[in-house]
Length: 303
Image (cartoon, rainbow, N blue to C red; front, side, top):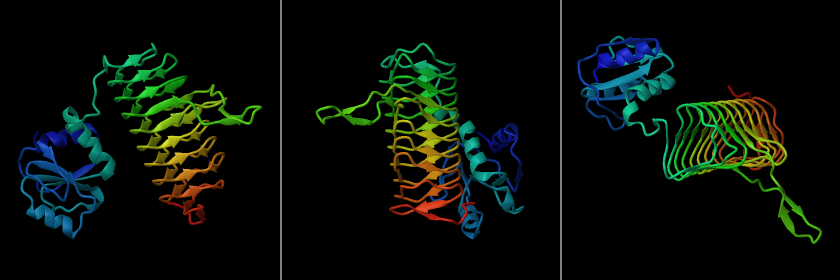
């Protein structure tokens, strides 16, 4: 691929850009700024003195930087609008053939798929179990060793990583007449919105008498637990090792930092940010920062 080819991709994506002095060389790989390679493409989070020195020392490396940092003397650098989002959009296009997440429509023969409700362009990996009541939308990718059971609806363009468990029973306890505990029936399901990502080893429990809900564009990292009856809004990011207890409500655009735990029944507002290892034990307002154990609210508005 030549630099001209990359400029054609940028134009096809309608990304605003400016260019500096561009040499003529092939691009056949990628690299990080700390491990520069020849004939590679990378990005500059900051166009500062250190970055400019990297450019001067490089050989046949193409750099992508922010349009706000445009420098007409910047060699072999393309300056684009909305750097991070657009850089990785470009990367997704030009390295499509080697991206392990790019799958053709297929159900691997080692999987058991009981549902007949499959959308267009669905991939289901090896050793999965998909129950009869599951509804899968269009352009959904389900990687390997995934179990989806019970009444689960999966929206379009959703990606489910290997080892995820969705629709399993929640942990609702009651005592019988002898005082011995038993798990109450969980008759609800799970509703997963569009463009949701559920990462490896994460567990999403079905609801008890209602559904567990994940809003559109929500992303849940590896090894998280989402308990029964939880309602998660749109564009929520739940990072690794978070535990969200039963019947919690999380507002739109909220970020749960790594290792956050949320007490059952709590309501978290919109645009809330929790620090690493925070224990949320009280309802929260919108636009606040929560940190510590127990979680303390910083009234400073989050920008």
